[in-house]
Length: 282
Ligand SMILES: Nc1ncnc2c1ncn2[C@@H]1O[C@H](COP(=O)(O)OP(=O)(O)OP(=O)(O)O)[C@@H](O)[C@H]1O
Ligand SMILES: O=P(O)(O)OC[C@H]1O[C@H](OP(=O)(O)OP(=O)(O)O)[C@H](O)[C@@H]1O
Ligand SMILES: [Mg+2]
Image (tube, rainbow, N blue to C red; front, side, top):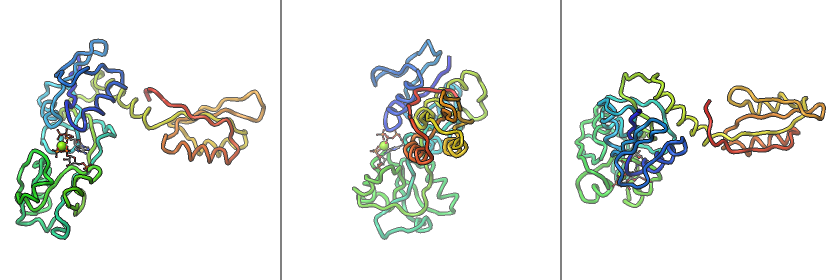
């Protein structure tokens, strides 16, 4: 039975459960459940604090976990990213009152408040900057107003929290993050059960980012049309009853679907349809 750690709260929790559900796994019915068994799929899910997940996985007691890249790095746990999942995207940035700091060099001798002490201490050390780090559990934006620190380092998604606190980011982003699948460093990533789990999640990622496109075009236009819709491997081309015409089928990125339909129409393709992909194995 594959043992999988899933975030129990916060920004990662809902989207992670949605993705697992789309991948065909049972998920808990109420938010107080700490673990569930999905016997049909031979997996057991443990609902844990996102910050702790890399640590559980590095201990080897759990096979796989879903967490944030920033949380993995911050934990310093002996675990590695094996699949990015494309949700809970954020950047990790320094911020301060406007005009008080421009670059990381300005942090020398100052105090930085953060919930991600591991990331910040390492970044300061790598940059050769001698600053103090004070750990706070959350709402770090308020630390400057209340005099606990001159600078903060925090997760920025929309930037609303910083704006509300009258703060501005400065310097280069410390890192970019998204939800990821983690596995103990050096563990056998080829294990069939692990591979099957990853293929299911990859199937969801593809279903979310691609649509299926079908259209008819004249044989003379086929090369141009196929250049617009190369598909993942190569498009399927079938003869039509009307001589001189073919039907083409290919997966296209959903974000580009409307532009591709316009371009296909412009070269004479007709009966252009897109349909959603519900699941796939590549
Ligand atoms: N707006 C956001 N706020 C916080 N974390 C975010 C946001 N957007 C994406 N994330 C990512 O979610 C993870 C943090 O999740 P976590 O559950 O620890 O914090 P949270 O969503 O702030 O919840 P909590 O209310 O428990 O602090 C990190 O990987 C972070 O990069
Ligand atoms: O750029 P934004 O879209 O505003 O999102 C980022 C903010 O959201 C999170 O805080 P959260 O609300 O989770 O509170 P916390 O600081 O107590 O964790 C995070 O710590 C930032 O403060
Ligand atoms: Mg938070």
